[in-house]
Image (cartoon, rainbow, N blue to C red):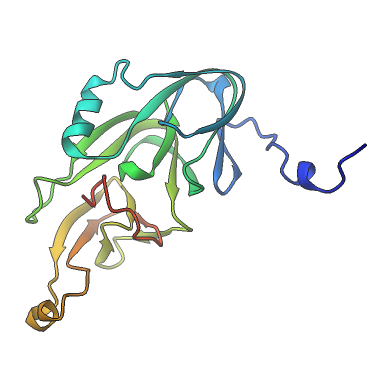
Length: 226
């Protein structure tokens, strides 16, 4: 008896031993030999070797309190051990980058995993707009690998080139050097009478750096869009 076809050869494990490497567009492979990592709670889909998962309540009470108070949707687990860990989030596409003594501000719904050398916290976004009391994001700072998710292939917009605006439900992340404010666009009285456009609150970006936009506006709870 035998199994014929390309199934097991086509989808073999990626042989790369890099700390963070894409198995495919929707699945991240993490080599645990480089040390502990933080991964989104419940994101583990498989592992080989001896990988252990720490309850997010251990040593993270301050961040858990902030999460409860702000509504920012990030719950992380600490992963340690040896072997390979595979993580994913509802078949969303995974984007990997390396921070070198830098910082990014990420929607908590899009955080998938990052090296334990990265410092993270939930922070209030400073704006001049009317909603300054209720906008929160996750800051990732330091040196190490970061993996985030997007619904579809994103676009990275250089905010220094032109005034840049994004729907709060589509904005995934922006880099250090980027400033953000809230723009209120009612479309005028006639638009309000007809029910509006649904694009009343927009995130306006300036400064120097990039903002990452996903082609989906389906996330409606948690994160800065709340």
